[in-house]
Image (cartoon, rainbow, N blue to C red; front, side, top):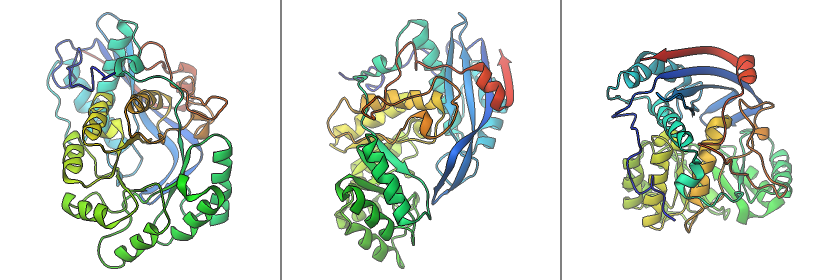
Length: 385
């Protein structure tokens, strides 16, 4: 079943061309402590500082979106501080006035607005996002991400083994030069190389010592190597890397738009596509990216951005849609309890077999718990037209 959204049909209301502006937009900034620090080549996060967006239609129906930006620059979107300022000063006022929105530099904020609008529209007709996308809504096979760069090989091997025993289908290890081959070998010895992937977050290079390091990684028999080199590399250079490497190359940070996904796939610059709706323009754009990859026979998976429950529920529905076609890989998304002690909404959970349960219900099937918001609240602004 092909999603109406994935086919490119226009949603009832477009953020960029709003024909029926919302009655109000609520912007809620929260800081929720992570259970453990998330460490990767692009930085460390110990607190989820994110913006939640409430979209109220003229008929009073509410919808929600999440802007899962990071606290520091260097990943693939604006920072949380930039997103907050952009939403308060530019994006939300423009949407409320029914004007077009210029999203340059504010992709995650714009994505969250679009997703909040879509959630409200779906709630107004009692339809779930997973049904709208056309996913099967079955529990999802998942890939557990070990984001503890610099940890000892033995400790990561122990954690990988525990993840597999708890029902994970794969384990992905965050790596960087100097923290790579020994760690991956230890993990592979513990659980088998056929279920191990690695994510370099663009920390290697194609010149200097880079090729030698990549060649060493290529000998490990990984399921895939994600974003080995920085996002600035050309499609031609990435296509040559895909040909040179036996290990499939997954692109993540390089894919900053639908045009980028299309260009990468057509150029043969990606063996696998990581789809992150907050980085592409929202869940509708994420579904279109999945369709683009499918048309060229390129496998996909829906990756996580350390979302809280609102963003996690949205991305999980998209991950369900990704499984509806051939060539999908286990999603990076995990249950709320793997990241935070108390989520901002009803948590996203796993079933007894360790598979990720797809939230169901009107819209994304989740809405914030006001008592939790008040506990972690930083700023709360409601704007009206």
